[in-house]
Length: 368
Image (cartoon, rainbow, N blue to C red):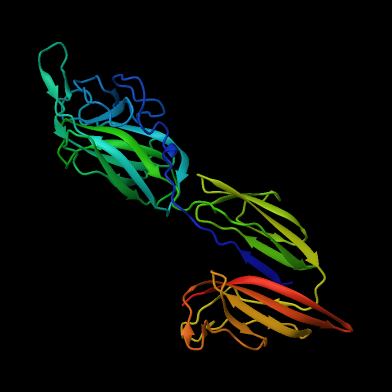
């Protein structure tokens, strides 16, 4: 039984999607030792503050009304050498192997500190620190360092932009941690506001048109709608990117990449078939002698034959009336570039005393 494979080729625009990080501007009532809503510390020695207004910090937020401060600690007191951190659970995972553009506002406050006990000694947290961003799959589970800032020694808010590439696993938790400039411990601080991520490097299809197709009775069809990082829900109940269709019907898939979703419908009808063809979905005319041409194979009951090949712009670039002609990815000495090409085959089928026409359509990838 032959399988006809339909590949759906999609566009992937980038979209800004800060909502993946809950409370990305750290909005909340300023209070000491308590982070804003949706953020939480990872250990008992971490006491992040919702600023401004505490430990002599009066700086205005870079975005909204509040922000968060994290400190590093030196070798003094019950929390000695215990640096602060804070975490949030992402609304949508960052997929391993994908790239994400992050933005974050950072600053340093030179008068940060507090008085010790009831005495007059003022403990200064006045040494610039750096920020580390970790990824995890469970709360406070720092499985991978995603980014590390330079030493934040500027009093003004500065927006940092960087790209992260999770490699170990899909990231579901983001952990922010203050750290020292080197191996020596000291009292320092870093202020954090307005963190966001361009989350949609592989967006779901925009403007994809549904199509109708035919399959022969007792034949099958593979509808493949794969996109990077996609999730799928078919009206058949399948959650796979592709399905095998063996009968007529309406096949609907809801595709999501976590930011947007697109619903695509395919209408499949059955018809009686005698003449059958087979076509590859890729060929490689690179001179290595393997899979060099786009060849059509057909049964002996095929009479008249016509093959046309079009580029993505819909321009016909090749035509032949012989099933024994092979397209080499060129015409009159002109080589066509690697890419996806659309083909149409019209045949006349001769079966006993019956003669009828049939058509086939599909895509082929030329890879040099």
